Every structure is written in structure tokens, then in C-alpha cells.
Image (tube, rainbow, N blue to C red):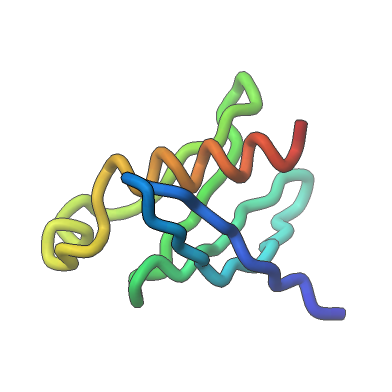
Length: 82
């Protein structure tokens, strides 16, 4: 069973697509997204909104990854679940 899928994101008028896969873990799940070579987990918070779980130092090294981009990915994941 392949749990991988693509996450389309529109950021600043540009279309981007990121490979992702569902990672079940007990009663919860995470979504592992490849964001320009960085493996970033997204998980639901207490209210059901998604957040990125990552080391900010790793993001600072990759100039293609921004907080704004991570927020857009989280929003796209949340919108797909609604």
C-alpha cells in the first residue's frame, strides 16, 4: 500500500508541488513532506490545525524553505481534510 501523494501549493503566484506520505503512529498520524530536500513532518495540533515540526536551524540553511511556505503547506493539508 502506497501512502504517498502530492501537495500542490500556490505561493506568491507560483505553483509548487511537494511529495508527501502519511506516517501513522499509534492513534495519531504525521505527514512527512519533502520540501526542497528537507524532510519536514506536519502534525495536527490540539485544535486539528496542522503545524510543521522541524529544526529551525535546518530551515535557515535551505534558502528555498520559508516559514511562509510551511504555513501554506499546512493550510493545504488542513483544507484537504475539511
